[in-house]
Length: 303
Image: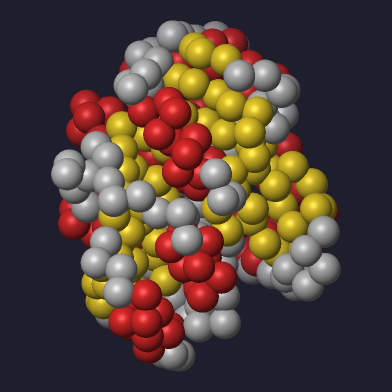
Protein backbone atom coordinates (compact mmCIF):
# COMPACT_ATOMS: atom_id res chain seq x y z
CA UNK A 1 0.00 0.00 0.00
CA UNK A 2 1.18 3.52 -0.79
CA UNK A 3 2.26 5.65 2.16
CA UNK A 4 -0.38 8.35 2.66
CA UNK A 5 1.31 10.18 5.53
CA UNK A 6 4.82 10.45 6.97
CA UNK A 7 5.28 11.55 10.57
CA UNK A 8 8.73 13.08 11.12
CA UNK A 9 10.03 13.36 14.70
CA UNK A 10 13.37 15.02 15.55
CA UNK A 11 14.70 13.39 18.74
CA UNK A 12 17.36 14.92 20.93
CA UNK A 13 17.97 13.75 24.52
CA UNK A 14 14.32 12.86 25.04
CA UNK A 15 14.67 9.46 26.74
CA UNK A 16 12.15 10.37 29.44
CA UNK A 17 9.44 11.67 27.10
CA UNK A 18 9.60 9.84 23.78
CA UNK A 19 7.96 6.65 25.10
CA UNK A 20 4.60 8.39 25.65
CA UNK A 21 4.57 9.80 22.13
CA UNK A 22 5.50 6.46 20.56
CA UNK A 23 2.70 4.79 22.52
CA UNK A 24 0.17 7.38 21.34
CA UNK A 25 1.18 6.82 17.72
CA UNK A 26 1.59 3.05 17.81
CA UNK A 27 -1.81 2.17 19.26
CA UNK A 28 -3.63 3.83 16.37
CA UNK A 29 -1.21 3.84 13.45
CA UNK A 30 -2.72 2.53 10.18
CA UNK A 31 -0.79 0.53 7.62
CA UNK A 32 -0.63 3.50 5.25
CA UNK A 33 1.53 5.61 7.62
CA UNK A 34 5.25 5.72 8.34
CA UNK A 35 7.15 7.27 11.25
CA UNK A 36 10.62 8.72 10.67
CA UNK A 37 12.59 9.23 13.90
CA UNK A 38 15.70 11.37 13.55
CA UNK A 39 18.04 10.71 16.48
CA UNK A 40 19.90 14.01 16.39
CA UNK A 41 23.11 13.00 18.11
CA UNK A 42 21.47 12.32 21.47
CA UNK A 43 23.93 11.81 24.34
CA UNK A 44 21.42 10.04 26.60
CA UNK A 45 19.52 6.76 26.04
CA UNK A 46 17.07 8.15 23.46
CA UNK A 47 18.22 5.73 20.76
CA UNK A 48 18.03 2.74 23.12
CA UNK A 49 14.49 3.64 24.21
CA UNK A 50 13.33 3.91 20.59
CA UNK A 51 15.01 0.66 19.54
CA UNK A 52 13.54 -1.24 22.47
CA UNK A 53 10.08 0.12 21.67
CA UNK A 54 10.31 -0.92 18.01
CA UNK A 55 11.58 -4.39 18.89
CA UNK A 56 8.91 -4.90 21.53
CA UNK A 57 5.99 -3.83 19.32
CA UNK A 58 7.42 -5.08 16.02
CA UNK A 59 6.37 -1.93 14.17
CA UNK A 60 7.93 -2.05 10.71
CA UNK A 61 6.58 1.38 9.83
CA UNK A 62 8.93 3.03 12.38
CA UNK A 63 12.34 3.98 10.97
CA UNK A 64 15.32 5.37 12.91
CA UNK A 65 18.00 7.58 11.39
CA UNK A 66 20.93 8.58 13.61
CA UNK A 67 23.10 11.61 12.83
CA UNK A 68 25.52 13.85 14.63
CA UNK A 69 23.82 16.72 16.45
CA UNK A 70 22.73 19.31 13.89
CA UNK A 71 19.58 20.84 15.35
CA UNK A 72 15.87 20.69 14.52
CA UNK A 73 16.13 22.37 11.12
CA UNK A 74 18.61 19.85 9.70
CA UNK A 75 16.78 16.95 11.35
CA UNK A 76 13.49 17.92 9.73
CA UNK A 77 15.14 18.43 6.35
CA UNK A 78 16.68 14.96 6.61
CA UNK A 79 13.29 13.53 7.56
CA UNK A 80 11.74 15.14 4.49
CA UNK A 81 14.46 13.64 2.33
CA UNK A 82 13.95 10.12 3.69
CA UNK A 83 10.14 10.13 3.88
CA UNK A 84 7.86 8.94 1.08
CA UNK A 85 4.37 9.90 2.29
CA UNK A 86 1.92 11.84 0.17
CA UNK A 87 1.28 14.03 3.23
CA UNK A 88 3.73 15.06 5.94
CA UNK A 89 3.36 15.89 9.61
CA UNK A 90 6.08 17.07 11.98
CA UNK A 91 5.85 16.17 15.65
CA UNK A 92 8.00 17.14 18.63
CA UNK A 93 9.37 14.27 20.70
CA UNK A 94 8.02 15.44 24.06
CA UNK A 95 4.43 16.09 22.93
CA UNK A 96 1.40 13.90 22.12
CA UNK A 97 -1.05 13.44 19.27
CA UNK A 98 -4.68 12.62 20.01
CA UNK A 99 -6.13 9.11 19.72
CA UNK A 100 -8.23 10.12 16.73
CA UNK A 101 -5.44 11.84 14.77
CA UNK A 102 -5.30 9.15 12.09
CA UNK A 103 -9.09 8.79 11.89
CA UNK A 104 -9.29 12.54 11.33
CA UNK A 105 -6.65 12.37 8.60
CA UNK A 106 -8.41 9.47 6.88
CA UNK A 107 -11.69 11.37 6.96
CA UNK A 108 -10.21 14.36 5.10
CA UNK A 109 -7.65 12.56 2.93
CA UNK A 110 -9.82 12.30 -0.18
CA UNK A 111 -10.52 16.04 -0.13
CA UNK A 112 -6.88 16.55 -1.23
CA UNK A 113 -6.35 19.76 0.72
CA UNK A 114 -2.88 21.27 0.36
CA UNK A 115 -2.80 21.96 4.10
CA UNK A 116 -4.90 20.86 7.06
CA UNK A 117 -4.75 22.97 10.22
CA UNK A 118 -6.20 21.69 13.49
CA UNK A 119 -6.58 23.00 17.03
CA UNK A 120 -3.98 22.30 19.71
CA UNK A 121 -3.43 22.80 23.43
CA UNK A 122 -0.55 23.61 25.78
CA UNK A 123 -0.48 21.43 28.91
CA UNK A 124 1.54 21.45 32.11
CA UNK A 125 3.80 18.41 31.96
CA UNK A 126 3.39 17.64 35.67
CA UNK A 127 -0.31 18.21 36.33
CA UNK A 128 -1.45 17.45 32.76
CA UNK A 129 -3.83 20.40 33.06
CA UNK A 130 -4.49 22.74 30.13
CA UNK A 131 -2.55 26.00 30.36
CA UNK A 132 -3.97 27.54 27.19
CA UNK A 133 -4.87 26.89 23.59
CA UNK A 134 -1.95 27.01 21.19
CA UNK A 135 -4.29 27.29 18.21
CA UNK A 136 -8.06 27.33 18.26
CA UNK A 137 -10.15 27.17 15.10
CA UNK A 138 -13.68 27.86 16.28
CA UNK A 139 -15.32 26.37 13.18
CA UNK A 140 -14.35 24.01 10.38
CA UNK A 141 -13.57 26.13 7.32
CA UNK A 142 -12.04 25.88 3.87
CA UNK A 143 -9.94 28.68 2.40
CA UNK A 144 -8.97 29.12 -1.24
CA UNK A 145 -7.14 32.41 -0.67
CA UNK A 146 -4.01 31.84 1.43
CA UNK A 147 -3.43 35.52 2.10
CA UNK A 148 -6.96 35.86 3.47
CA UNK A 149 -6.32 32.84 5.68
CA UNK A 150 -3.12 34.27 7.17
CA UNK A 151 -4.70 37.68 7.64
CA UNK A 152 -7.61 36.20 9.59
CA UNK A 153 -5.30 34.11 11.76
CA UNK A 154 -3.16 37.15 12.56
CA UNK A 155 -6.16 39.34 13.34
CA UNK A 156 -7.63 36.62 15.57
CA UNK A 157 -4.30 36.13 17.35
CA UNK A 158 -4.28 32.54 16.10
CA UNK A 159 -1.25 32.57 13.81
CA UNK A 160 1.77 30.43 14.60
CA UNK A 161 4.63 29.05 12.56
CA UNK A 162 4.80 25.85 14.67
CA UNK A 163 5.06 22.97 12.20
CA UNK A 164 3.09 20.58 14.42
CA UNK A 165 -0.10 22.61 13.99
CA UNK A 166 -0.77 21.36 10.45
CA UNK A 167 -0.46 18.52 7.94
CA UNK A 168 0.73 19.40 4.44
CA UNK A 169 0.89 17.81 1.02
CA UNK A 170 4.29 16.82 -0.34
CA UNK A 171 3.41 18.31 -3.73
CA UNK A 172 2.90 21.64 -1.97
CA UNK A 173 6.33 21.34 -0.37
CA UNK A 174 7.92 20.84 -3.78
CA UNK A 175 6.04 23.63 -5.55
CA UNK A 176 6.60 26.13 -2.72
CA UNK A 177 10.33 25.30 -2.34
CA UNK A 178 9.77 25.76 1.40
CA UNK A 179 12.85 25.17 3.52
CA UNK A 180 13.95 25.48 7.13
CA UNK A 181 16.45 28.13 8.14
CA UNK A 182 19.50 26.64 9.80
CA UNK A 183 19.43 28.35 13.18
CA UNK A 184 18.90 27.04 16.70
CA UNK A 185 15.51 28.71 17.22
CA UNK A 186 12.64 30.06 15.09
CA UNK A 187 13.84 27.98 12.18
CA UNK A 188 10.30 27.29 10.92
CA UNK A 189 8.88 30.79 10.38
CA UNK A 190 9.70 31.11 6.69
CA UNK A 191 8.99 27.42 6.07
CA UNK A 192 5.39 27.73 7.27
CA UNK A 193 4.83 31.03 5.49
CA UNK A 194 6.08 29.64 2.16
CA UNK A 195 3.89 26.55 2.48
CA UNK A 196 0.73 28.49 3.29
CA UNK A 197 1.15 31.15 0.61
CA UNK A 198 1.63 28.49 -2.09
CA UNK A 199 -1.52 26.58 -1.05
CA UNK A 200 -4.63 26.52 -3.22
CA UNK A 201 -6.80 24.92 -0.54
CA UNK A 202 -6.50 25.11 3.24
CA UNK A 203 -8.80 23.34 5.69
CA UNK A 204 -9.08 24.34 9.34
CA UNK A 205 -10.65 22.14 12.00
CA UNK A 206 -11.85 22.91 15.51
CA UNK A 207 -10.81 19.39 16.52
CA UNK A 208 -7.96 19.29 19.07
CA UNK A 209 -5.40 16.83 17.73
CA UNK A 210 -2.17 17.86 19.44
CA UNK A 211 -0.94 18.51 22.97
CA UNK A 212 2.23 20.45 23.62
CA UNK A 213 3.72 19.85 27.06
CA UNK A 214 5.58 22.57 28.94
CA UNK A 215 7.83 22.07 31.93
CA UNK A 216 8.62 24.76 34.51
CA UNK A 217 11.56 26.77 33.21
CA UNK A 218 11.23 25.40 29.68
CA UNK A 219 12.52 27.22 26.61
CA UNK A 220 9.03 28.50 25.86
CA UNK A 221 8.33 30.32 29.11
CA UNK A 222 11.72 31.12 30.65
CA UNK A 223 14.19 34.02 30.26
CA UNK A 224 16.02 33.86 26.96
CA UNK A 225 19.63 34.45 25.95
CA UNK A 226 20.51 37.36 23.62
CA UNK A 227 21.06 35.01 20.67
CA UNK A 228 17.54 33.57 21.06
CA UNK A 229 15.99 37.04 20.81
CA UNK A 230 18.22 37.87 17.85
CA UNK A 231 17.06 34.67 16.13
CA UNK A 232 13.45 35.80 16.61
CA UNK A 233 14.21 39.14 14.98
CA UNK A 234 16.11 37.40 12.20
CA UNK A 235 13.14 35.15 11.48
CA UNK A 236 10.87 38.20 11.33
CA UNK A 237 13.20 40.06 8.97
CA UNK A 238 13.69 37.00 6.77
CA UNK A 239 9.91 36.63 6.34
CA UNK A 240 9.45 40.36 5.80
CA UNK A 241 12.00 40.42 2.97
CA UNK A 242 10.53 37.31 1.35
CA UNK A 243 6.98 38.68 1.45
CA UNK A 244 8.24 41.82 -0.28
CA UNK A 245 9.82 39.74 -3.05
CA UNK A 246 6.67 37.75 -3.78
CA UNK A 247 4.31 40.73 -3.58
CA UNK A 248 2.22 39.90 -0.53
CA UNK A 249 -0.68 42.28 0.20
CA UNK A 250 0.53 45.28 2.21
CA UNK A 251 -2.27 44.95 4.79
CA UNK A 252 -1.17 41.38 5.50
CA UNK A 253 2.45 42.47 5.88
CA UNK A 254 1.44 45.21 8.34
CA UNK A 255 -0.46 42.64 10.44
CA UNK A 256 2.54 40.33 10.30
CA UNK A 257 4.76 43.16 11.57
CA UNK A 258 2.36 43.84 14.45
CA UNK A 259 2.26 40.13 15.37
CA UNK A 260 6.06 39.81 15.23
CA UNK A 261 6.74 42.95 17.24
CA UNK A 262 4.25 41.79 19.86
CA UNK A 263 6.17 38.50 20.09
CA UNK A 264 9.44 40.40 20.51
CA UNK A 265 7.84 42.56 23.20
CA UNK A 266 6.80 39.41 25.10
CA UNK A 267 10.41 38.25 24.94
CA UNK A 268 11.49 41.62 26.29
CA UNK A 269 9.15 41.29 29.28
CA UNK A 270 10.75 38.00 30.43
CA UNK A 271 14.32 38.68 29.27
CA UNK A 272 15.05 42.39 29.78
CA UNK A 273 18.76 41.94 30.49
CA UNK A 274 19.31 39.73 27.43
CA UNK A 275 17.27 42.10 25.32
CA UNK A 276 19.48 45.07 26.18
CA UNK A 277 22.65 43.02 25.74
CA UNK A 278 21.49 42.16 22.25
CA UNK A 279 20.34 45.71 21.51
CA UNK A 280 23.60 47.38 22.54
CA UNK A 281 25.87 44.89 20.82
CA UNK A 282 27.44 47.13 18.16
CA UNK A 283 27.89 44.31 15.67
CA UNK A 284 24.07 44.02 15.49
CA UNK A 285 23.50 47.66 14.54
CA UNK A 286 23.59 47.18 10.73
CA UNK A 287 20.98 44.44 11.08
CA UNK A 288 18.74 46.65 13.24
CA UNK A 289 18.97 49.41 10.61
CA UNK A 290 17.87 46.99 7.87
CA UNK A 291 14.95 45.82 9.98
CA UNK A 292 13.88 49.36 10.77
CA UNK A 293 14.10 50.42 7.13
CA UNK A 294 11.99 47.45 6.01
CA UNK A 295 9.31 48.21 8.58
CA UNK A 296 9.15 51.89 7.59
CA UNK A 297 8.95 50.94 3.91
CA UNK A 298 5.90 48.81 4.60
CA UNK A 299 4.21 51.33 6.85
CA UNK A 300 4.76 54.09 4.31
CA UNK A 301 3.56 51.70 1.58
CA UNK A 302 6.64 52.31 -0.55
CA UNK A 303 7.09 48.70 -1.58
